[in-house]
Length: 530
Image 1 (cartoon, rainbow, N blue to C red):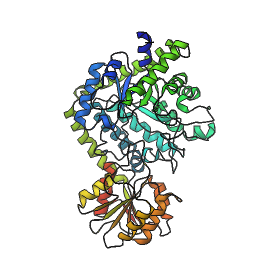
Image 2 (cartoon, rainbow, N blue to C red):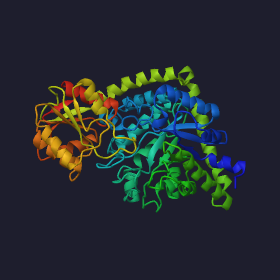
Image 3 (cartoon, rainbow, N blue to C red):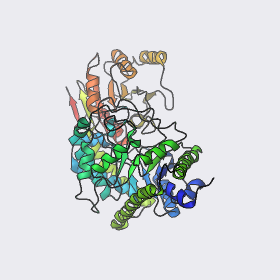
């Protein structure tokens, strides 16, 4: 049975689907003309800036008030620069540089790129307080200290707004202390309410209380994204579906839309049918539902599963039209504010491919400055290489948030030393134990060895393989792409001691280029002897 037009429009008004390709598919165009709240762009939608600007223009032609959002954190998680690697080194690098003014200016430069590309809402900043070993946050966070994360998170958000973009703090009420990845399973934050308020909630509360210096008298956070984590101290359901979590956000002063993390993540659905998760999210207080993407024809099926379940929930009385209308009002107010923000920039707020290229050049300049300040070398010996190296990537776990295991370090090494050899070869699988043992034997020669790590945690395969390589080649150099403080501690505990190490603070292009600059010649950020 088809839904009445009013009900269908009301249901569309809480949905943010993904889709495949660089042009809107027919099903999405129909929904956009029928009240769709917005879309979320992924890397497969944004192969380059010109294509992105053309896509966002076509989306806004379909529906001028359509909210176009994307995850552009900089560093490891980039959508607009996914093909080349981010011009920004990311939040961890900004935390290491520890200059709130620089963080604000970086956010502004990123906001100008988003605005020039036609993106309305950045699903950033990450306000999680990281804990060592977290498999999904890590270098996406500004650090491990709640006050520092609060300081840099608010500064980055204000910068994004000054650049014309909307902001979305994530992952409320905090994903930093989890030990599992919500893309794959449902994590639990086993902290009492007192600990949450002293640790995880500090950055969110500070940003929500920051109601000054905004470009349009808006709070620093235009929207808030809830996490797919269970917080027993707040309630039994995942935070994205838990009414007490949305209530807590309102208690802290958030008046804008509450957005869910992608509902196709395995923490809350089977990845194919998000209908029940969608209904529960609205029941739990969410205003906008990110549906995720399959990067294929299944995107429409994902969207239909949410639409059908929500329409049925209205028909049976589980949800009311008034409840959906309340969410739509919050979204309409957000879109009006973002349109006014962009208009206030004058010519600088007009999207287009040329404007996006100019903004990218400015972003690259400030990103290189941040990387030079943050990326540094530690250890008893210089990391400078005598020639083209063998590069061994020990990272085994896919970065689901980034959508890949980035190879920007390897690309930067090959760009500097065309004779470098990569292990595994580009596009090749990680070696099994027997193949790795053979590789260790092959690396006994005179060529320098560079090892790329992310989580060499005691007891891990990454750690045991690194120790084996260090036994064979004590002169190896590590480029650590994970959290710098924890990485240095893990590496110092190797049986052979701390090797010559470059702490890259992430795996974005800016991080990689700064790291290779240290491998090519001693730099000001080298701390030999530590």
